[in-house]
Image (cartoon, rainbow, N blue to C red):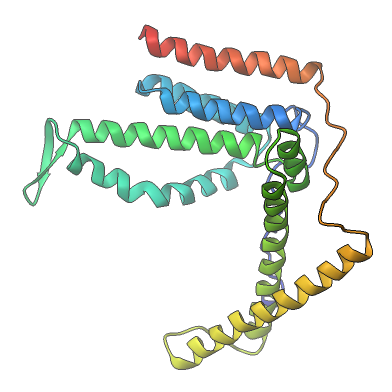
Length: 261
């Protein structure tokens, strides 16, 4: 029964980053967010495959600097690639150009293959950088940094509540699934399964409403007046300036190579 009771699934709040301090974790959260945005803008503007491969290498370096577990990180990226894999497979057949081969009379072109590789390199480089610089950040710190970057206050609250309580709902779902397994439930393609899953969803909604009422009461007891104090002690330091110059130099080099090659 132990294998049933122990879910063994990580929390959504688990960023996957190392708990020990790293060079990336010591950088000001605002600098990390701005660097990730700047990297995404630069990578999207690149077109040479060799330079895009270099950008992917920079992303891998950031992953190791943030001490993200390579296996789990690459598994997440494969999951992301699953969403665009069909688009990449269809591109050679939809972009006109020189034919490589034909399938049922439909020619696959070299130009389409090149566009598919270009999109794949851009997507993976940007996602990996976001995971290393932003995804390894605690949700509270991320909200505080966005607030200090003058993001709309309502959006910051929405983001923080979403990250926190999607995790709570997941934990409720796991508890209900464990209870169902403990009672011998085995999913199948039958009426009993669909009925049980309907009860599961209904019970999750009921518990979510009850949980929200308890949370609202607790927040009012703590003096909640519609605003959450987000002002923190964020301050740029020498390491942040050094990171900004180094990362800016890498981005400038990528842009310069695009014009020189």
